[in-house]
Image 1: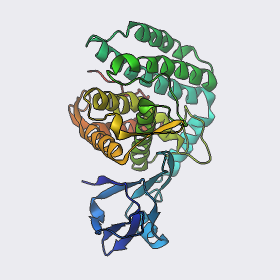
Image 2 (image 1 turned 135 degrees about the horizontal axis):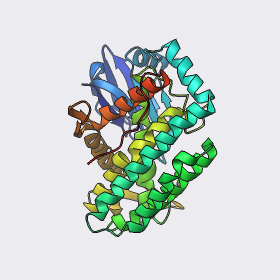
Image 3 (image 1 turned 90 degrees about the vertical axis):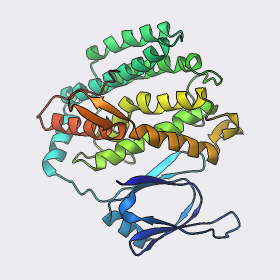
Image 4 (image 1 turned 180 degrees about the vertical axis):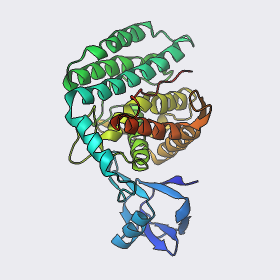
Length: 334
C-alpha cells in the first residue's frame, strides 16, 4: 500500500535506480545520512523544507504517478507537482463542464456540498453537546441557516450562507476546547494556536481531496461551489468542505484536549503563530491515523477508511455529472 511521506528538513532528492534518495542538509550545508524510499511505496510527498532536485527526478515521479505538494516556511500551501492525468476521459470532462456552465445544475451540486458540510459541523457540535458542552445556541443557529440552503438562487448567496454557518460554528471552538481559545477565525496570518492548526489542517484536507480526485476521471479544476481559478484545483476545495469538520476539526479537538499538542509546540512570532517542527510532526501523525480509521459503511456493508470515503465522494460526483445517480453528500451517521 502506498504511503504519504513528509519531508520536514531541507535537502536533496534524487533518483537512485528504483528508489528515491533523500539527503537532508542542515543550515550550514552539511549533509546528513541518506534516506531511501522504494518508489513503489510512495503515494505522494509533502515538502515543508527547501528541496534541491532536477527535472529528471520530476520525469521519474510523473511516470510513477507520484504527486508532490509544497508548503512555505509559514505553512502556506504554495502548489503541487501534479502528474499527467492517467485516467483522462473526454466524456467526463464534457459532462463536468456542462454541469458547471448550467446555473441550475451547478447550484444543485453546490447546495448539496454546503448541506453536507453543515450537517457534519452539526454532528460535531451534537457530539460535544452530549458530553456536557453548552452548544445549544450554535446548533440552533446553524440548523436555521441549513434550512435556507434550498432557497438560494445563486452561488454568491449560497456562499454567504456557508460563510455564516462556518462563522457560527467557529464560535463553538472556545466552548469545546479546554485550555486554548480561538477568538474568531484569522487566516493570513493565523493569530493564535487554534487558527494555526485549522489553517494547516485544512491544507492537509485539501491535498487529500486533490490526491483522490487524481485517481478518478474528474478534472480537479472544474468546481461547483468555489469559482474555478487559474492557479488552484477548486474541486478539491469543494470536496474538502464536507470532510474538514470530521477529519480536521475532530483531530484538532483531540490533540489539544488530550494535551498531545501544547503551547511549546507553537512559535509565537510577530502578528502570527506557526507550528514548530515537532508540532507539525504530531499533527501529521494524527492526521495519517485519522485517514486510516475505518467505519462500517451502510451501503457497502463493509469497513472503509476515511481516506477511501473521500474517493467514494469523488465517484459520487462523477456519477452525478454523468447522469448515472443523483449526488448526495457524505453525512456522518454516528
